[in-house]
Image (cartoon, rainbow, N blue to C red; front, side, top):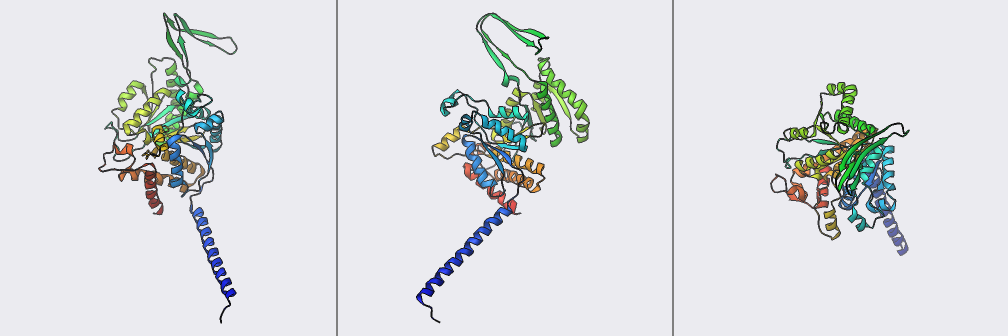
Length: 440
């Protein structure tokens, strides 16, 4: 039977319509199936975005390593310096309160502005460290651990296992008050109780000319939280705990730290430590340094605020790179905040703005995400999310051990003929290994 021209035209239109319906239906099914195959989350993470080059890496990590595989749920807060300035730093406080609500946060590196940054970003004022604000609100202790990979050997040859630094995150020099003394005179330290019934005063120094003076403080509640966080973390990691201060010189201030640790251990943790087969050890800070330089590692070293700040950089550098060090803020109230131990990689960001290629190490930032995802999985009882975090960490380490790495690692690796990759290609190389591991 011959069809009219109109019938042929209508048939042609129908065939096109049918094929497109089938095509789009298949496309929709593919999208739905991919969404269903993603690893599910129930409770969101608190996501704190940051500044400069780490902000660039943050988005690439999400696009390449997380969103394709996870039904990623986050409550987003922009802690970039401009937005902190626009909100008078309220966004940092809001993100901290959200962490209390959801329990787990992941944070990108952020700028703590100095005078030059105030001018560069045209800021209203020199805002405080967002990390300091978060630590104060969450009442947490910072634990920093090197990421160990084959081919990146510690400078200290006897170190075989990671050394975790536990840094008290409150008070001391970071909340000090300072005074420049203009001429001869006396400086006294005076305490007066709120009800006015007790007043004590000690002479700090009798100056015979210009000088400087500084006052520091800490509080029993924060020291106790610090100690509890350290003991609990040691039990969870099944690692020995060391604590060091200088109580022989600071017979009241540092001795108070020593006493609080000792009392808690004897009254609450000694039996638990013995049952777990781990130990608690106190020594002077200088003795601790001497012992650590001859140890194999594999323990947690608790330090006061300034000591922890300095020693964490020493440990990270000796193990290879600050970009290969994890950082987690642990609160005794059950809050966790994960981030990289390093800063915003300013120099690479300026190169990026010029359109130049960078080779920025993203490992610590990746491990901030995996740490947060693993903890979210543990709290929500999601074994698939825990397994994904572990596979992503394995893929990252295996990529480096296969010889593919960023420029900072290529300079120090003992592997032969390493392949130096740019910032984005390194993350894409990790994705290739991750996809293989997920397909197994």
